[in-house]
Length: 450
Image 1 (cartoon, rainbow, N blue to C red):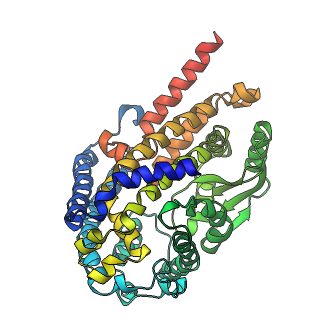
Image 2 (image 1 turned 120 degrees about the vertical axis):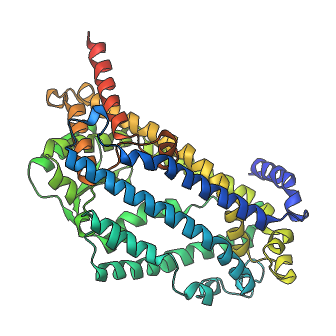
Image 3 (image 1 turned 90 degrees about the vertical axis):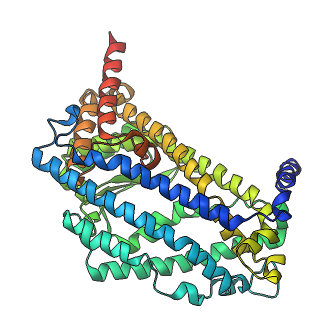
């Protein structure tokens, strides 16, 4: 621990200028925030002309009828226009909100890190600025009831939308308040020598599927039948610790489909959207689950969690230099008294704003890692017969390819994708890339047998 503290102290020494130099942080945040927004808008401008193509890529021509392809293109155009507008709209709110926060008393909220007499629950009293109508709510309404409705995906009723909204706010308070209180008390206890190795992600891994998701969706035991038999047999052959097999009512809100697993290392649960079951055959759903179990086999969720923890650790190791930095708060027009002894929560929020451009770069790197994991999971499905010695699984790659095509057709997913747009936004390879990859994996597998 002493070695860790010594290394963290070196970092703080290198960042000592933050606490003394009068840097115009507001200008920096505004400039780089707009840079990220304009770059994302540029990516949309690069992508948008592809929605005018009249035919799918040659590798997908046999899978898309002209009518379905045209629907896919229209859906893509509408989403791109909405993303372009909403991105600029949200960005235009950023600076006014930060200015209002500093000039309307956010800096005067009690903070247990600088006044031990204050109770941390005070940090979660609803501030008048935060209690007003959220300006991005109309975007959510438009996206759900206009855009998604227009293309036949929305199944959410107005009553369900409002209920979900209030549930989300209640959960944010119920879970966010205790976590934030713990975060602030840790800094009160240890000061700037402690980098909290505590991640909200670790807690959410357990809480989301067991506590949160059942509040929004109904999970039912997958009924007996061909699909259940196939999945249980597959899990058994791979020694996957399957405890429960669920069907989730995803169609309650949307026509989009998915499948995933969760749980502790010794007790896993598989969840399949009812839309996926209705859209694909049992062998194809089995192939989708074979891909998902490939993620488990190669420990991809664990690796991504470790990478995320390293990312969070890096952020928190930089934060102490910004914790007691009067020039930082003065740059955002906070009063001198507040800037001299800033509340931890305010300093952290400003610190997050400063990190915005770096986080954009990190997201590209995370997408690259995620796509690599997707390739590995696809290869796992193709090579499944070699691992379990089951003759009936030799066509798993073909089945997975058919399932992917079905998912893209039913979801009207974009099939023409600009490479730079994809690198920034997509955590999965494109459909064309995956189909070609599956063919390459199968060819390589057959070549090994010769």
